[in-house]
Image (cartoon, rainbow, N blue to C red; front, side):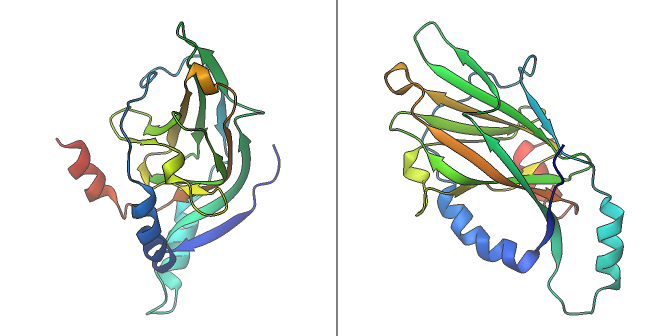
Length: 196
């Protein structure tokens, strides 16, 4: 496995980015077709991170400094080179990839390339299949063809990209960063969303 380059994400930057993320997270309908089905889906498993190392650093940090919540891990995951493709009877093409960052409390994805045709939808969900975001379409693309997700609970997520038969094979997705959340900062939010 290639060496993973790490940087630490600060809460201040996360919250500033959160304004843009909230704008990016407008869903446009639809639902995952394979939610809960993990068999035979390619898994990209990153090296484990010692959460305690960062928690101890935070405890020793100068009072008043920005609160850190996660570690940004550089990756290179493309729908044209990795993942599992399933073609349905109606010609719909579904690309899936699982991404795992062991010990993560939550994860976020950054797409350096988010170039999808009209009619295509992207979904991201946690290991349980209960926490789902999407569907995202070409209307969610930011300037420069980039896209980033909100935080998703847990240490393993699945990305599911659907293309209708009329545009099958046209989309291009590249995930270049995975944020490994090492704090339970959003746990109460996830619990509220999931319910009892």
